Length: 173
Image (cartoon, rainbow, N blue to C red; front, side, top):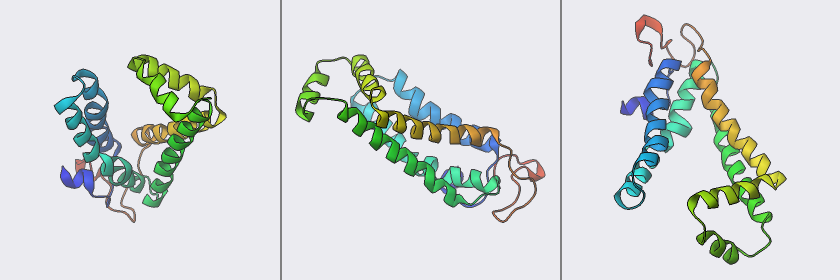
């Protein structure tokens, strides 16, 4: 399993991507924090899980999926760059839509519940053209994962390795 998540060499099928990576990643990084209490040990656990999945989610698994599609893994460099730039632009756009100083912004946010904070930030991002651009870039990253789950890999062996579906394995080469 460790080699599956951390080795960018070779190929991985749609089935391997969804069952071996995407579903566990969603369960551990999205669903688990929703059901566990906030703070303390659970916050530390969530941080550890998120750090564990950094390399597999941005490099190893997407590169292997690109290899299965017959593409170079270097294409994966574009998506995190777009995501990082998008988040930065969205934050900059949100702060640009705010008239006060950063200290006033922080004080204003402290008086709100988490739901109110998220709604307030979402409205600020919507009010800024840069915020929309950031959202579009973030959606590009989400689209990539959906495409990886849907697009069929190239049959037979290619320059990146054996067909993961060859010989009834159906997971990874």
